[in-house]
Length: 456
Ligand code: GLN
Image (cartoon, rainbow, N blue to C red):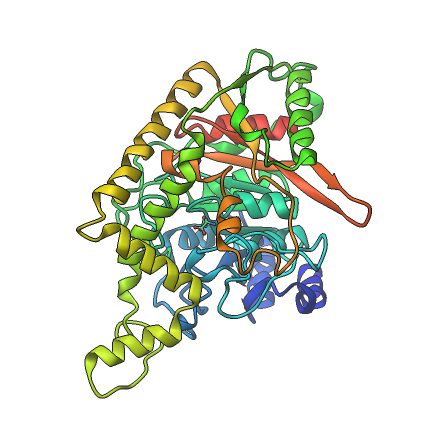
């Protein structure tokens, strides 16, 4: 009731949801009945979850923020959603996003612009801006997002919540609307590290419907959320932390840098040794990411042809049907990415762009491997600035892309990363949250969650 009331009151200002369930109360009553009758309850019983609109839900629309999928209702639940529901979670609604996940502000939604709860004139980040804003404003308890190049971590930083991007393959992508399949992963938002970790546990694991999902055993992430008063004074003694030098240099907001330095000192107080490390290929990640993500998306989005799904414009002949359905159904950012990707993959340019980008991807993976051989975790900002104004970068895609510099390398390497609040950008008129990003080797979410829980 409290959550629904808050949702009702805040939603006209925030617009974080594209769809709100009308059966939440009924589902909650069902949980109450189970409690009364002493039936077994799942680990997420009664937990209200917001689900990003590119994650399929059988009883609600799933549009991925695109007009081309307006009113589309998938006949099935994404594996992650099905697992969560089995644990007793209640899906409260579908959250707003940049169309198909392409964007960093949520302004690229085909439907509405979501506001940042800390300052309604600012963006919540993106593309999972709705999921981040919803948890930040306590419209729901936790939420699911997706992260192809930072779409969970950057909005978590902008909205002052915890965002967790799992290792590629930790969570099944079955039922996640594909953007760039070799980078996409479903991630979690929570107002604490424990909340995000418990949600991750519920959705992780191998799935026969996604051949890229990992068979690795899923540890019980929750077991390490020790009560703070049981910790000794140096609970992270011996942990080697590498602060990525290239992420705290020119072009990054000075308040962001001092927040990250503050986080490093806090880790030292907890017993870690912190040293600066260099990732030489760091700045190459951004252009490589945009080539690879656009290339994969140009292929993935060919399925929206006006026949198989969603919106159809009737025409006299087939090519006009395709053309007109896509022209009217897809937004301008999406069209630009499809053009870029098609160009990069075309015969004459493949070697110069796509192949080069794949080579950079290998370099990035190698440089993380070296840095993570010498360190248990790496830290950096999650974005070069705090949340900016709505409209500020809307007509300047390159400056919006540049804001992804802190996050895209992690996707290229398939690593897990946790973002949690660590400081503020404080100007005369407004105080905005800043998040620190913690990165570990693949499948070491447990370590990240432990450090994050002790840190917060
Ligand atoms: N902002 C990046 C992009 O537009 C990342 C988006 C994402 O992770 N889905 O591609």
